[in-house]
Image (tube, rainbow, N blue to C red; front, top):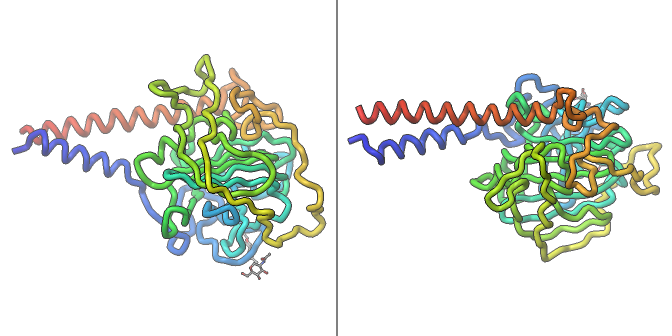
Length: 341
Ligand SMILES: *[C@@H]1O[C@H](CO)[C@@H](O)[C@H](O)[C@H]1NC(C)=O
Ligand SMILES: *[C@@H]1O[C@H](CO)[C@@H](O)[C@H](O)[C@H]1NC(C)=O
């Protein structure tokens, strides 16, 4: 008879269903676009094309990762203005995305943990159309309206076995710094790739190595961003906790270059990355304090009071969660009720 076990079964089925993503793609079978309002494409081909609108990103290894960055150059292309339309810029040729030119990345540190892969680093990302001085912003698959930032952006990885779609990921990018974490699909993915701390920057969200130079390490997963034992910090809380310590790493292999032989004509690559003064957002060195940036009129970093996009995003996320939670509870009660009848 319908009973607790029936109820639990149905409840788990329901929860399993709601936790599922609408679709699982591979680069080979993705449709032209995957979300409403997408400006680019998920059918990228393999040709090298520096005006490509490819929105498939890979995070496979130290020499095979991508960063989301603007499709067009110009002062208005700060990440905060372009988060919905970023395109993939990749180190490896053959993805159909734009190639990151040699010299753009001056530091990259790839870490493989049981739960995620992550690359943190530094460089002159103005070569990827990010305006000089842009403190940047955060990209993730959960925009305020449920679409990703960028809309339709897909992330894939071979880090956990055969190539698969990564559903939980977060990428901060600024004119001089980046960090990208892709979580292995599973129960820890959402927490370890939490995306709600979008003004806290790389150092706070992904404590790690941001020095120049290149290496790949194994590492511990560390603690989820924002979670401190039993308490969870929320952006805007009175007290901002310090970043977690960087998880320990081991078996590091250092590489002298991650160059791919691609040079932009007219671009000098002999000068290392332009030193853009770290301000806030992704570029924040201290990371612990969310300082709104003057340079990025970003929806993430706008000053408080003026209908901050950050709090809008945050409250929308919470609102969505609340609706899902309440909705689940209602449906579960109905199912439970029916079963008892
Ligand atoms: C490069 O990509 C752009 C944008 O998708 C497209 O319009 C153009 O035809 C591509 N060029 C080549 C040579 O494939
Ligand atoms: C990228 O690959 C294409 C073939 O798909 C080749 O024609 C081109 O020379 C390669 N470019 C670089 C910079 O490796």
